[in-house]
Length: 511
Image (cartoon, rainbow, N blue to C red; front, side):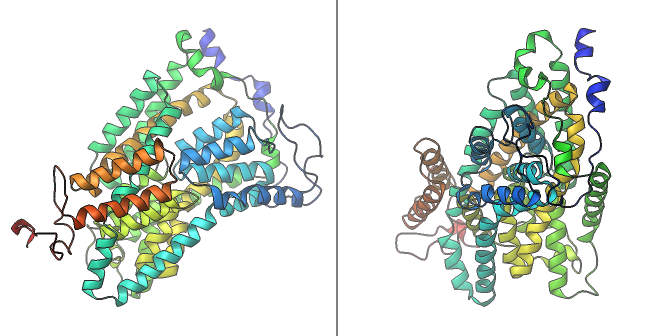
């Protein structure tokens, strides 16, 4: 009985979560909280005017667009150091961990959703948009530009030129996926630690992800597994022997004023959810529309947006999890009848995919910027922009939609405990992505060794990811020239294999 009572807030607690006084719009100057008024213990008060708060968000996030290297675990560490432990103390540790768990449990890019949520918490709707863009724009711009250049090159290059380009890029994929392994290790350690319950939830999710073949069903299966993980930790937290494991989430939240600072009505949140779901339903069918009344470009634009949007709304666990789906939709794309929107996307080669992934891993900002590269390779600049909007759109709309509801829901202990299990379960998807990507890109022992070397160079010796990735990609090219394929596999997947005096292309490679 005592345990049951502990997980329900009092009516007074719930009543304090009143509707905000403003709708989804910029708060006028002079309407912000008074300077110096305490928000929560130890947290820096907001500025006098709304304009000053927007400037505060801009100044905080502008540098991050240039220095946010290292993937989601590094981004979260940067946010923690800047906004919780540093001079810009916008959040206490409890709320920071809640936002991380919420982002991890929702579809979309975790670190970008956290950046957006922190902008919202400081300066409302416009603050969230500013923090989102400033966190992403550098990586997005580079990916868009390089992808568009490759699109132009592939339209004019000869077959031999394309084969040479693919050969040069052959080591990019094996080297780049090393960062997925390091991210899995870092996130798994941070979220699960040595907790047997959390590790078990991650393991179950990883196994399920590897066993489910149908791409459409996987989105619903993953969500179901994560919800089950949440249920497990809700009941696990009730056990007296596990009280210490849930000590932080069982603590009563102290700040109940952020809802008013955000300036988002709950009805606006509901509207955003309906729009997000409506677009999801549309994109489920858009790839099967006939192209009879469309130009080639129009069909490609619709296909890129629809393909990436339905991924963006069904991906849990961050950018690493989306990579196998991106590979399936842009490299081994099948299942669309001739004359449909889905058939308008010409599959890209694995080497280009690997190069784009290596570039994304080497850039600041989220891995989801990779969508701009893929869209641009297929359909130049418009395709890159639509790809970016498609993959990011659902997660950003949902974080705006759920923020006002979270301010009420976080008062319930069972909600906070449930997020712990969902967060742990989502880590399993990252480990499953490691297995899938290794199987796709490491077709021989030499490529596998390149992945391992890049992993150790960044994780153990602290070499910057761009240096490790591009250096190991060059090493893979050396292995290719010297005809060193290792203990398993061969180089038959490279068209230029056998064109050099150091190589003797075996008969099994000749089709």
